[in-house]
Image (cartoon, rainbow, N blue to C red):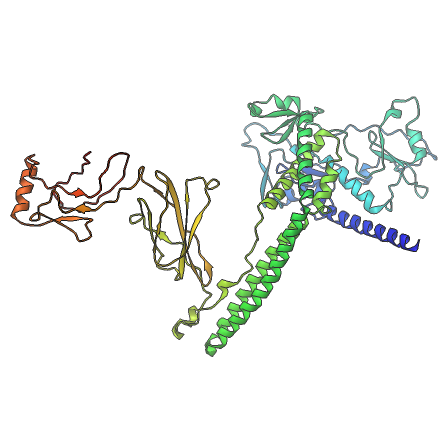
Length: 605
């Protein structure tokens, strides 16, 4: 029995720890990017990020724009309809407030001939750029009601009722805790005050009562430009909610416009699938976190080894290297710290994809939203973040290289070069010689390093067939010495893409620009010149390898040229190959030196 009680207590403690971690992660998703606190009265910027209304107003004023007119802050005296006790004097019943347009900034209209309207720009911190609000400023920004509901549920869960909402109609010190809130009166009531102001048999008895809150929201989102028009459509091209009047505008001609119910269902299904995909790949996330943590450890170990090698190299030099030693050690430490921070950031990013992290908790809260326009408005940013998380999950790469190979010193230089002592640099991108790179039955690739490049021990040549990288993968020739390479086993009438990079003790350098070589449309015909036929030894000489022929200067050559110029070809010399062709297509090429006499190439069948 005691063992069962212990297991029950342990399970309860673990559930409490998970819930606390979940809530802490969720709180990070609810922070305003400006004030770093939980958002209050959030509005959605055109970039889909949400900020506090008051913070957005202060940022605009700080940037020189006119201050907008803001509604009273919740629970302020201006927002409290009455403070008298109904038991002492019967006050006038509160008049139901009509929900305002979701836009909050109001600016005076322009007169004629006042010049172009002022276009407001808001510096969005998450985007890192200025977002255009338009001439109306915050008026065109809708209120994020879904985020407000999530914040309210979060506060209720975290506080567990410790922060009480007081009745707004009881007089201190007899103020009672509110038990109900009226969405139409936008006020909080205790039981007695609620019955007093909502008597049976009156229209106020039909008011919608909710949980007590300090932040009353309008029941539905309405168009900021057309008063009381509900947002019933969603423009996929503009990614904006539209009312029936906005839909008729010329600016949306040809756009993909959906009913908000259809957009709601499609977005909800997408986000559900994306969340389920991430949750079903928790093992992959954990494996990537393990790999990142291992890389961080390896980075630390390699950095220590590199630092020792650096110190040993410095000790082998004279005292003149002491100052340079300090600067290079600082550079090495900075690289270690930068790479460690990059890998640690990746670890934090992958931890954010775990089941109980903030983004997942926020998404689960978001999916509880049933108000379709509000959900569509609030879910775009979450959809983008989930899509980006899936893309990073599927195309995972390390943010930093844990090796420190290029932080080794070359101490073989003379003392006069000590002032220029630096870490070994990888070779620069080679320059391919397009004049000497040819394509026959083989690919002949030639290149050279730029004059200012570090030396290269060897080169890596990569090539692929076709222009589509996804269809044809790269093939590699490793450790190619010299500045040329020959590639065989090619396909006829095909385009090959080639690139090359150098390698030394610091690692591989950048790739060269890609070059494209087209192989011949038929098999290459390899033959030798036959010196027994059609050849006059007094006018032509075949080389020893029987690949080329040259003219012999003299009287006989001039006579043959004279006959050729007078269209008498009977005396022209013929160079015959030693390979017979009976059928098919064949490719061959010849090179004629400048200044040669008349040359004709023919094929006889």
